Length: 309
View 1 (spheres, rainbow, N blue to C red):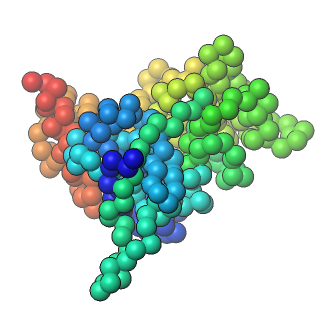
View 2 (cartoon, one colour):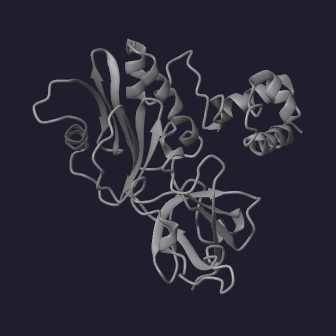
């Protein structure tokens, strides 16, 4: 019934309930939503793919988080970080799953060995929203909130399809009778929707909806929020869901200190034949400040060099 063992703990850039670190856009940029890390073999046995939403269930409760597959995770175990509570996610408080038992000597809670099962959490739609404003808590089945530089970021998913995405998006991002510039793309047949609210020529909010979790990377959109005036090519990029020609998608942030993304690391390592984290640091500065991203940089180097063989 509960074939896996749950382990909990910290992730590298957050501390406890994120009361301090959660306010830092730079620290929040590395991992923006709660997750369950599984070994690929355990995931395959449960028909779970990397990036799927999953339900983690114990005898005490259940949470819904994003699946992350990693060869380094021990088979039979699943790791869920402790940081997310109901201020930052709809249903991700890992203490919901753990028992109240404590060690009779130290008083240490039993947070490291909880029997659980992990199963897909099927959604009818997936999406994300980025806004300069912190919006009222959304009522979708799944949401996770994180701080960005000058923006708030929401990852979203739900089991029920709204009747009208255009109406729902406007109700969420615009006050009644509010006059704002609004651009949108809506493919009703494919259930794909993209829209942006623009104020005084600047990007104020964007929302992207898809029938599957394969959504665009967010970093090029975050750059549009920082750029000031929104160019015509950027408006078209939002509607097409792809960065404008000449713009580069840096990928998910790996080095939070210097804002270095995975795609930048992969391309630079491949093009310049870099073989050590020290060499990467000399070129990109990644890993040269706090050093917490060095293990991930080392993994990326091994992955790139392995592909080249």
